[in-house]
Image (tube, rainbow, N blue to C red; front, side, top):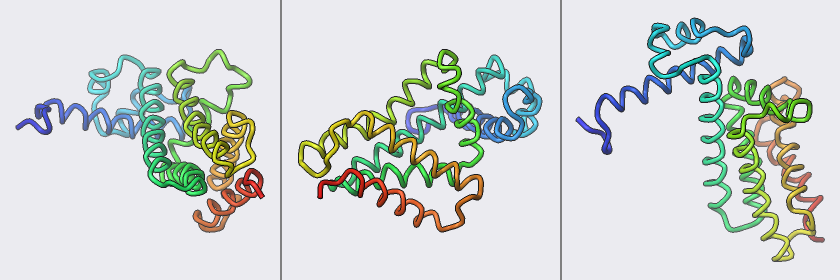
Length: 205
């Protein structure tokens, strides 16, 4: 029976593909890209190696798909939660909170995310074009919020683009601290702490 316009085979294929990518994220985060094999991914997904190759042509393609899917899901969730409230403070808090909670719940994914994006300065040419666009989408979303807030006089921000990237990086630093176990307080307290730190710095007196 079709499900929302899809055949049973299409639904099964999507489910199987999602299972493989979920397993891949865990294996890549544990072993790293170079030490991971397609056999490892197949074993973690509970499928035959040949099944993996029905969906992906290479280990690199699996890696790119796993990253792209995770980042796109994060971007969409962030956009929905940032656009929902009207107040500027709530939008900025939503940006921080959504990202921190997402990686708190998807720690395996953050490891490969950090591995890919953490070397931008050292190897900028190696960043896949799709990842670069997804990375920029995250900053542009917050930048648009800051520009509107500046027009309303709610913040004293005159460099919305730079401020957006700084907030983005401060949020990533907080995520990094939590995953390393350097912060032992409740996640909501950490989110509120970072929001308060940022808001005090950009809000109009």
